[in-house]
Length: 624
Ligand SMILES: [Zn+2]
Ligand SMILES: [Zn+2]
Image (cartoon, rainbow, N blue to C red):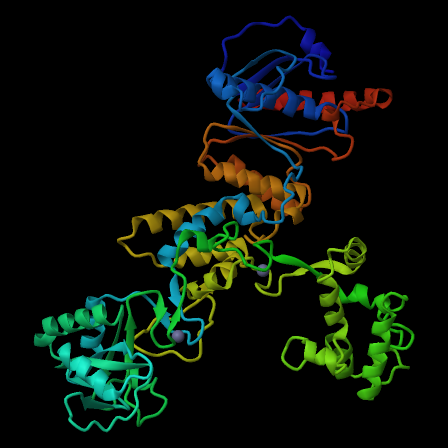
């Protein structure tokens, strides 16, 4: 093909730096074609199947760009790099390092998502510990490790003009007489404890307190909150924190301390105790949460992955539609398929007996039974949540699910494994709802304006409102996620957080601009179409701010709307980054790279393509 041009006497001209000059390409069935491709432009190679588009785009242009780039490495490095065969071409000039983005979706693991593929998740897991706020999973209050200074500041702000007690917890050894314990405290220099909402002196010769709990609050100091007492306050808090193992309580001794705190008092007669903790700990609920480490925010890390699905977002479980495939059958007719045979016929008898006890009609199709009866058949009668030996003794129905649970404990038998495999299917992980993260990761949220999800009860001295967890952010469309992250406030002192945020936003923006802004970061890569995979891959390269690079793409419009493709084209041509892009459109089938070439029918096709290509080459040369 292109033989006429190719055979013309070739004039050796000095290399121009505004185009890739290909001379005498003979790869596969190319007939020595000459073509100039402009740099900094989107070039589309079209033609019917088998006309040699791949031979030109991938096996000639890409192969040469890649080969020359690899040549620049040391021989030691080269052994680790894939090298392509030298293309059959007379000369190629002005070729930049090439990156091929193919439409085949090589991703097999279901741990791969748009977020991991574009490395946005890697940035998110670094960003999250910096910008997310922790909230108690039980009461919804914000948790942040306090210092003596930060506690003092809150107390000075909210309890000004009041008298406060600063107390810390001391464990009481079991079976300790109050008198003995009081003597011990006295020896340590502590004279008062806070018990039953009042101060009790430990040097009282006849203490009213007859019994002590597992721990008591020892009063460190009583302070009137004014600006002058600041130093004394900080010192008292520091000491209390030291003896209280990082926990301290502030007790305003007059009622109605401040509007912010009185709200939380459930009983107005009870004095509000304001607990503080220096750890990742909800001082109100006595609950520890995991500290925000990078690993916690990655589902590819054992720390962050949901323990049930190990970060895959789905688990294998018994599929009820397979266990009871035909719901128009009655119980008597054997609606539970596995009970029909002789092997588990005993279970059918158990079910019939249970139905007789519960007055469940075994002669009507199960789909016509009341919901409660259907649930009974499936879930069984469980007293304590789990079916126990005692339930078995009393002949209580274990349910279809209970039957399969029992069967799953017998998987050491080969035939049981085979049997189970027939009733199993992938289901969304019930523990994490497909979010892949472990519950501890969900304690951390970022604050944004878009999504209202305020826990109903909040209080203490906190004012902030929680918003999005990491999986919730990843479930937003890429366009929405970008808008949200852009609006996120980073501490002006935290340059790293700002850098990470900007990096993520830039990548989200690329994704949007190449026309896949409708995808979500948690979208499994396996489910992407060929065109989507290429665009997401392209973003990875663009995200690395790789300039002066030749991108060779294989049918980047596969699986996308025409509108999306036009957006992508515009972006590739934008002068912001000088990417050069050779695209290719062809049918997916009969891939010419596989070496198959339909010679019998190729003549007319080749002719057609030649015309197309010559015209294009002409257009390129006139434009430049
Ligand atoms: Zn709490
Ligand atoms: Zn899970």
